[in-house]
Image (tube, rainbow, N blue to C red):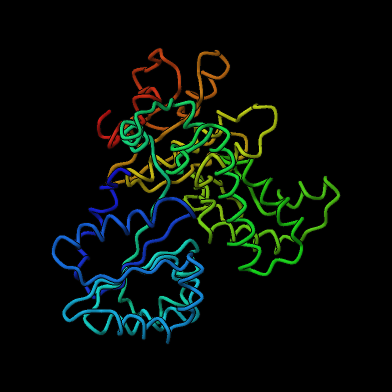
Length: 397
């Protein structure tokens, strides 16, 4: 497995700190590998290391609550600073009590979880600010290229647009890959969500999940989802929809951005745009291989920009105007970005470039497409997708 230096360099300065290191992300995005790579670095200076993976039934059956965990560590640690790695810690009853205690006794504690409940106010208040958190995500394209060399394989950009970046899926041939991705999907929906939140109406929940995940890179409101269900003759309250969406966010399955109104100069709180953590969540729900490359590409650009460290907003210019897909901000710089699979068609070209019409030239305007021709104008920079995916920063344009 490749060394994920992008994340390690964020965590490295905290290796010896008594702050609790919380590493979160969607199931199977590579959190355990990050832990292993941290352990490998620390093992070069000490063997005073304890590692417990609570997805292992043998581990959780013996160490199932905070008292058992504290006793295990005390019985197995050596003198001096001990480095403790607790994988999927949320499986342990009252885990926060154990972590809070362990960090006080010359231990450096690292924990992972696949549910953002681990970062909820309920738990972080108990840590009194004595923690740092790090979000791990599936591979971006640069990591896929690096890993493909290690595997002696090749993966196209189209493959990325359809099947995303869950790290282990690259080890399998097509049929096994699909089985693996379906297993991730089922594990999240059933174990991480239905069981965790004790969802009674399982069919309704699955219906809403499927609708949301197949509709990535689109603007929603809870009312619009209610309207869709009503047209399907399914009764569901707006409050239930809001609750179910929050569950998907807590499992790091979706990310929501509230559109920003240039007219009101504020966020539009009743609307939101949803991006999947990995585009495979969309493609698994497609029939007849009619994959949604257009919306998946925008979703991919979202994931890549987040990886680059940009804060993102969606700009809504008005009820009848074209939105700007992203306003990307970092280090005091703003970039206005449109994403289109292709602008070869005149109508599409006019629509996508026309979205910038009211944006003054003091802002850098970018359009990203999968076209091979350069469609740059005096006011808008065109970036080919294949070039964007290997960039470290938009400052390169």
